[in-house]
Length: 202
Image (cartoon, rainbow, N blue to C red):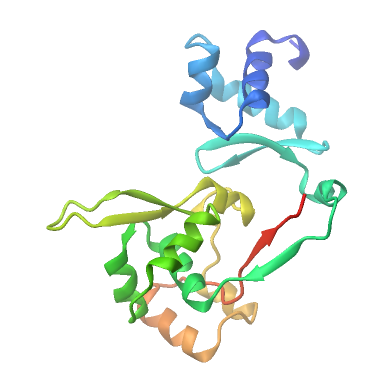
């Protein structure tokens, strides 16, 4: 049966197209019903849209339609402006990405210095970090994790795609201090030293 005539595939396609945010398989199933094989429908849709102007992508456990990466420039009405994250924000984001979920105290223990509340606020406002509950220890501190938006912004299918320290060394993104810290604390993985937030004035 062609994809255009498969009612299950069409139902999943419609649910994703109308969604404001990426959806998990369970969230899609809540719309289309338990009788639909959502996983198979997603695989068929991903194959159908492969190489087109619109593609179906998976970010973590969620799925959504997006403009093909090589055509995104066509939709930018104005030049994209960027602002660099502070070093503290870059290090904090990297620690959360590689070690999540982590508490503020754990982030500070890895960095060796305290972080301001504003650093976490910047990362949450960017949509890259979210509160992920509380650690079940005395004081029940908040713990933080990355978001699907973090994966989308950096073009990652999952956290498994984060570069290892060897990759970052080869790219020249680590200075001697970074490499020393990485060897001691990141168990083979390290952070970028130059990440940027894109602010589109659409």
